[in-house]
Length: 122
Image (cartoon, rainbow, N blue to C red; front, side, top):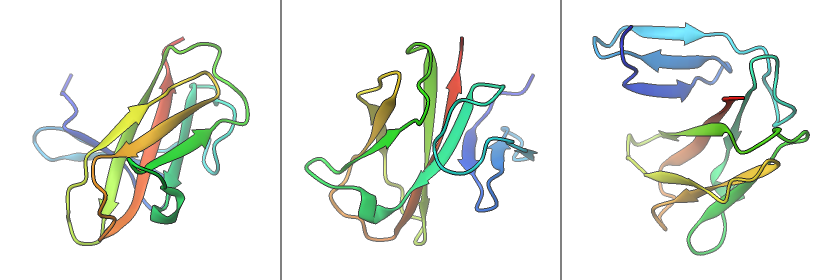
């Protein structure tokens, strides 16, 4: 099985996974839209706009409408930049009901959105 080299949420709500030979694989996600209860596969996905980040460091809080049963889930963030600028982002303060995305920059220039996918391991 090939190893994943990147994961991103495409504007149409699909998930794009790139394997090392750069062949994209698109996965349809049934549970699209605002954060909600984990779907049958335990997936949630969403997008955070620059205006939703505040504070020092710049953080945005994502709250699920229905909690995960435990902390046994992973969040994968992906930055979309109109300039191609790389902005590292950390996932912090995970709880069963929410998590925060923390930008490793105080400069939002070129940032279009931070897309994220949460996947349960339970």
